[in-house]
Length: 113
Length: 110
Image (cartoon, rainbow over all chains, first blue to last red; front, side, top):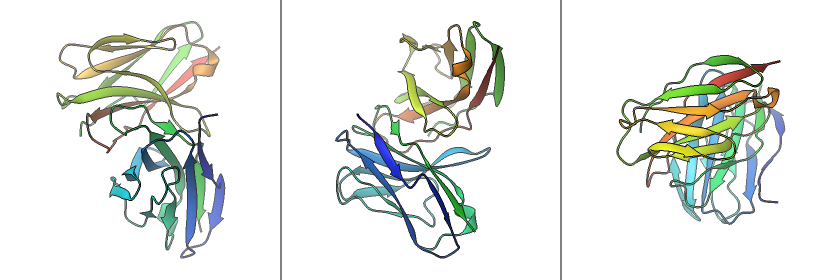
């Protein structure tokens, strides 16, 4: 089944403790991206990747890192999480990222205490 | 990147046709319009995409007037399961940055 898989589904952590949210797709998509969703603010793009080893900032990249070492994986890294990063995170992918429909994962609810 | 404006919420009854309009006054020539549906605790799901005039698929229709400054998502004969948040996205060809609006929360009543 074609899908975008995020892990974990829920995560509670404390301020400053590094964490990684994984994202994997099995559709051989070139484009992958991360979003955060907050009440009243909709979906905001954090980072995106056009292909392996090619990444760029979205609208809200501060406090986040990403890497794209393999085509199928695009982990989101929070080196020193803060409470304002408490949010619902979504990973998405598409064939090329341009004019293509995005396939989203089921989300990761992160709480930073 | 074109900014979009949608109504915050809408209510409808089962069996009715629902039209959700998205305003994108500064849409560029290369921009296309895409709508997504999001159920609680799930990621958004692609519904329909268009550039101009009318597009129809098995789920919805998308109407885009000649000036392209707005677009209307039409859901025929909605059911309770259509209760969701609907996002309008306007993005340029060849760009990888996407700006989603705040979406329209549709509630379908029995």
